[in-house]
Length: 621
Image 1 (cartoon, rainbow, N blue to C red):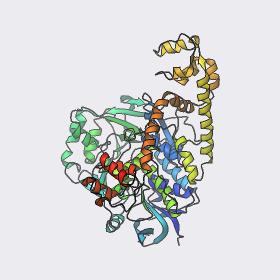
Image 2: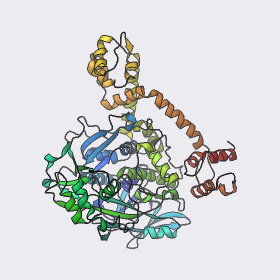
Image 3: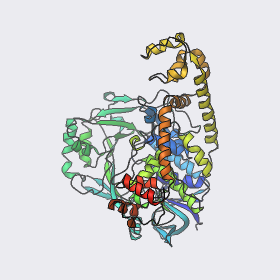
Image 4: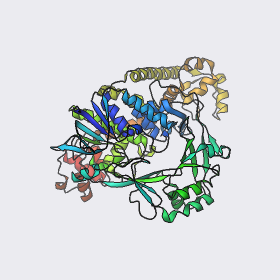
């Protein structure tokens, strides 16, 4: 009935979809197994992609040949570049998507790939022979052979939904939980834990008073995620902002005695940086109000997502409190918010390739590794899919360093540090933020993907070559150009910058705070005649190279120093317990995690600089 596959991907969420296309586009024959073909790439929580640090990840996924950026560009209803008032390292793209169009576009792109087959059924377990994963076993007893398996089960592993005092088995509202896999992995020697996440109520937009809320529009000239030629966004939907109040908080507190979060029924830890509304009220008791983002679910629906009101309180308490929010006085609810508990497997049990240490050719990606967020899941899926393909073809794993990508930071954090709460990416987690900008993800990563053999990159490579040439042209032009006081002083006065008294190189002016290439284009016609032909994103990349040249070089030097430690490899069978000069904690952590390199060892919590010095001496460095 089934052929033998190169890669079987279990789960068709954001991680599973990216894993499937990554392996397929590298040449593997892939089976994507899901419990429900109608919920492929479902946006289970908020209808948005990107945001601070997350937007950088989506662009990196796109640069490596993933589809999340393309799908988002085709289905977005609003686009905003966040943090534009800050430095370029902090700029982060974010898009609101049409939830139904998003899932439909993903399925369309998956079905267009001839290397991907589908199977709709629960996978109950994996097949292991001689310490190697060789297939999966389904709920009706089918055994499907493969050379590798990627588990991307999301919140479905023994998922338990909480609404007040009610408990429902399920991996998502209206969908059953997945059973069997956790129990088998525990028998194989894996360690598991429980985590919690939540989602807000969905409400009827026709019942809201929009005039009482602050409107939040998209960018006037919206950019996009993908480096391919995806459609421009001609029309946008607005989001809105409103606030809770003391009265709302008092109403919510009426249900605290029935809250599963406070009465101990939820054992899993929830996301620190995206707490429920009851958690916010409890933790920030001095705050009189909290901001709510009122977000549309799509072009052709009145369903609204109430971002910031995640809750597991009884549904009647949620309803009563929401009706006291300004603009929600006559609100009608589609469904209440809920919390969900699920199994995860501490990611310290993984190699840096996301292959498990206990079972060869078995890979984990997404929330099974303790992360939260579509973007974090998508990038893990992409890396797991690529590495599953490489593993079955006896090729070295693909590893991104912390200086290569936010993806590298995320995976390195997970594997070396682990996580006791849902892991979310932030710009502050990356040491090399100026190198890892959203605008240069293609320049950093697309050549690597092409070299690895990722198919379908022709248009990306063509666009990248053109972008590289354009940036070089801009830099050469600016470096050789001088401007006179008559041409530029009016702009300098307007920008509260000191006037010039004689001709100056254009590049020296661009090194001043607040002076940008687009300003020079608007002020000086002959500059605009040359630079005006380049789009704003290209101009931004070139300008960043000029303004931050010193910082960029400094970060490169730091990265090169760290790379030296990454090039000192440690043997998998290194007996740390015999190295008594190491601290007891270092011996325990190093024996448990078995880092590949000295650099990786240096980032393990509890391993001190003196421990690293001892290791360097021991390996002859």
